[in-house]
Picture (cartoon, rainbow, N blue to C red):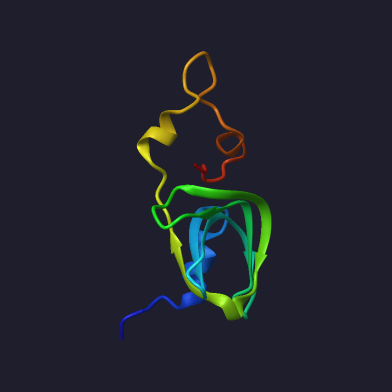
Length: 105
């Protein structure tokens, strides 16, 4: 039989990585997934509320999203232009690289 990933397995793989979360009512948030529980309550760090065109509407910091409101959680990929930002003059090293964690945007 084929080993299939379960939803919480995917959330576990996304820990400390950037995600996009859509909640009921159509609001979307982007942030680093810091934690979750069995009810799919999510803790996002460096969270931003997004407009319909994916531009930042509101910077929120650390937030807790109640699992009952979650429509989806989508792992995101760091954009090339955001990876290049900060490079040059020795600024290319991030705290995440020093600690061995995945980088964020």
